[in-house]
Image 1 (cartoon, helix red, strand yellow):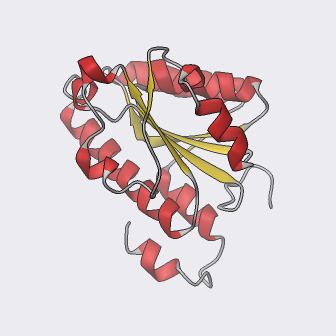
Image 2: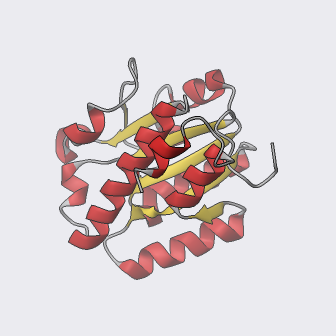
Length: 185
């Protein structure tokens, strides 16, 4: 494993609050890009056996995760409901994270300046390596996303595009699943 590069054998993907009640407040183009990149990451995670955690912010008000995402989750993956903005506050989140044995956490979802930011900072404080996928997070206002990414970077998170995650997970064009996963891009 190379420090500061995503390693599929040590990564865990966290998809944060991909729900209609939040998405409807996002800029349409930004939301579509985030949705597409979250689906790409989810597909790659499944192919490469990267565990996935999914949270939902107060689903009675904001709705359940979009079906196109929830139906693609690995078997046995259930959404973790939360009222706190940080995923750490979701019942069972920390336990599942620790049970995975993974030390790298890849974050994607909404909103960048609220739940993603608070989760990243909490995970860093717990000693995890945190990677924030800049083209798979969104905020209602572009400047909020910009400042959140900068703050997470200053706190010690690595900010990178989803394509970088995918290529780092693969490591080489000789990876047996290379062609399959590159076709997602």
